[in-house]
Structure formats: C-alpha cells, structure tokens
Length: 76
Image (cartoon, rainbow, N blue to C red; front, side):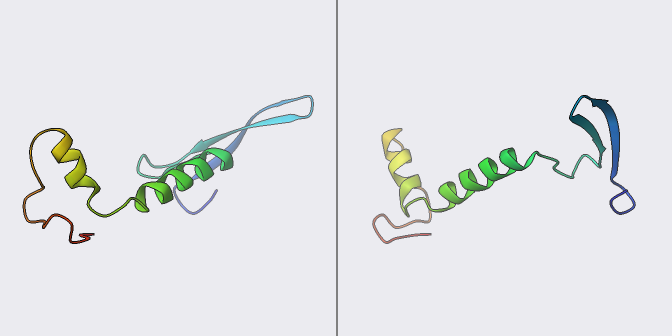
C-alpha cells in the first residue's frame, strides 16, 4: 500500500523479471520513470515557448492577433 488509495501488487515473477500491477484513483497519474521524464521534458519545452507565439499562430490562420493582447509587447 502507498497511502490509503494506492495498491502495488506483484502480478508475475518469471526468470529475473517481476511484473507489478498498480491500482490507483483515476486522477492519479502512474508512469514508468522514463515515460515520466519524457512528459516532464516536453512540459518544460512547452513552457519555454516564446512570448507572442499565439499571435503568430493566429496570424498564420488569417485571424489577426489574440484579443486583449498587444502585438510585439512581449505578452506572457
């Protein structure tokens, strides 16, 4: 048990491998470490986007700047 809502079970032992099953609430993300790291890196890349990028996308769609934002003012 990990806290009152998360259960870790040994599902299978075969040779030198152990398969685990994890039962957790649906709102709890459960990932292998390498998947978690990829998600984290992608989120950091997305957060480091350049200011004004939404305006660039809107212009490319011929819709003009996003309402409430002044073009070229470094809105974040």
